[in-house]
Length: 200
Image (cartoon, rainbow, N blue to C red; front, side):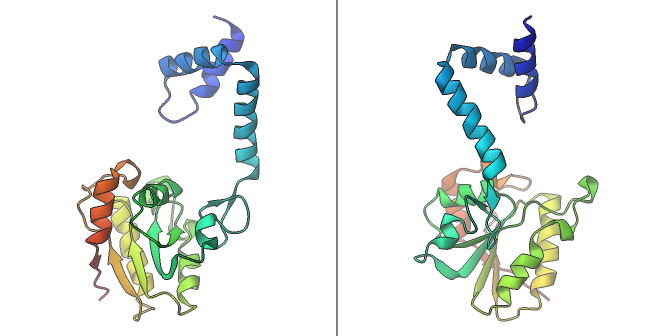
């Protein structure tokens, strides 16, 4: 096999979910593309990796200091939906049913992977609540063991804000499901049927 083809396949296999056969198929597809299209693709990937930032307010992906959601004055700034990853934020946005703000944790607590509370953006969330403008926090994280551990920790931190209503999305989403892969109708129902969380 060509060394160049072997190198491309090896690089493509670094991506999640890409095995040897899929890498080969993608490489052969790239070979059939016009050279300028391939150049544009590779430049876009390089620019994305080097120039992307995280919103200083919500930790979403951004081209500048604030993401488009945080810059949108038409959104309800009194409600924050807490999600694990940017992909979860996008899944909720795709429903078109939520018009509040977001807070991206950047993961969940997972001792097995060496991720503790200090590795997540929980302090940033608490800083927002200190402003006194937040009326509700919706916790929309996975129902995995790590997700439940993270929920428990967040609830313990939110006890310091008794005037803030804390809800979780309804559990129409199955235990262990990743929010990123749940269909939009299920997410919509889960948001609409969220419940308040006891913090005793």
